[in-house]
Amino acid sequence: MKKPQNKQRKTLLLLKNKGKQGLFRAIFSRFGLVLLLLAAQVGLMLGFYVWFEEFLPHFLGGTLLVTVPMLLYLLNSRLDPSAKITWLVVFLLMPFFGALFFWFTQSNLGHRALKDRIDHLLYRSRNAIEQEPEVQRGLEEENPGAGSLVKYIQRTACHPICDGTDVTYYSTGEDMFEAIMNELEQARHYIFLEYFIVEEGLMWGQMLDLLARKAAQGVEIRMMYDGTCEFTRLPRDYPKLLQNLGIQCRVFAAVKPFLSTHYNYRDHRKILVIDGHTAFTGGINLADEYINHVSRFGYWKDTGLMLKGPAAQSLMLMFLQLWSVTDHQPDFQKYLSPVAKVPGSKGYVIPYGDCPLDDEKLGERVYMDLLNRAQRYVHIMTPYLILDGELETALRFAAERGVEVRLILPGIPDQKSAHLLAKTHLPALVDSGVRVYSYIPGFLHAKVMICDDEEAVVGTINMDYRSLYHHFECAAYLVGVPCIQDIEKDFQKTLRQSQRITRQTIREDPWYEKLGGLLLKAIAPLL
Image 1 (cartoon, rainbow, N blue to C red):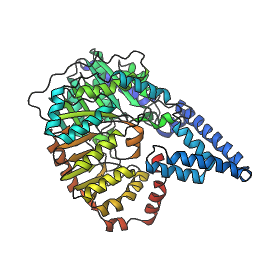
Image 2: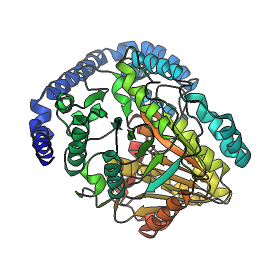
Image 3: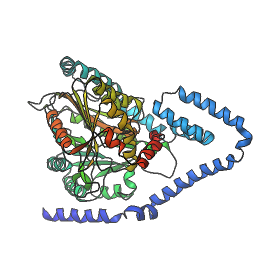
Image 4: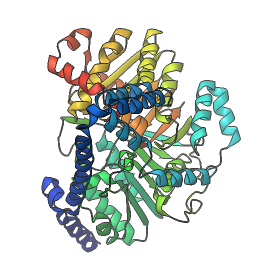
């Protein structure tokens, strides 16, 4: 048995060495050509603008004819008010080019076919998992507010309410990784993985070694990761390298040398499903910083869930929906079958996915509903805080009506621009009574909301524009599940490692950081 394992580890070394990493690969690989062609197209567009700019003084009337209709259209559109303000700034500074850019982003150029395909898949799988009427009635009777929220969640796709599911909460990436490895060893039929970030190292190397052994034993392995991994983390031919190990692999929205709004819509989900009865989700990707094997921004604080029971089927359906985007005849029912309920498990679990191509802001509205219904407290951990007006108002209103709202942000940010933007929201939040904290040991990447000891959300959804508007996301909404107490205990432990942000600490921030945040806020919806 040792010989095949050593062979797989040798293959791992080949996988890691085949692709040049970082800037060198970006310049000298096929991906470098993609970037060059994209830059050439942007340069061509700007060149046309500069050339026509010379004639603008002679066509002021034309500028007015373009700007006024655009403003009227914008003001009457369904865009978020914050996004409207951003586009007004763009139109003011660049009337012609701003109008072209606006129509480019709103035209669905490059992802209309994707939208149609996903709409078809969601419609086709609308009733792929049957909702048990008695389970829905039970939730509505025990918690009418949660029952109403789930009715909204179910408008978007097949998101059944599940009981009989055992839920385990992991407060660190290290603990969740150990659990994942233990569960992978038990796989007998299939393993499905969908991740935003995959990078070769200790974490993914150990998983890949195990997956390759499982594939050799006849277990079906499917791996899907987001196309942004091709920037610096993985070589472009990585799917072929995995296929050589018996692992099916697909890249979601691979980068191509054509300007398209398609690149704005990333697969930010983290899903792992084993044999249909066990699933993992949360903030943890497959890279060494998530298990603190390497340190990038101090200690990396992350969280996740393991679901055992019927609710695992919902995460599997989400995986199959995106996996099937390029399949002509997807077969959902081959993998979707009734899963035995776990005896003694309590509460309700509703896994759900948020699609950026529909008109529903599902992730944001779930957060807002919890804030609006909370009676005693709402506790939040999020790595990013780039809010639209609605979510900021919901946070402030909850605090103003006496709900204890506590919010923990990273102490060491991974993105300076996101950190500066988060600070622009703090004065208003603090003035309304929201208690904001900074996680001192390092970077907090958890996406958690707990409400009144009764409800919680754990998943991939950040409190920023990208997650709430532009990414494919997923989460699990928990009601009356025992592990909610574990989530709250972890929040309190994290709180003890954090420093409170007050009006005084805000005043002490450097002036140039405040200025940078104010300038960035004008274009926050575009970032």
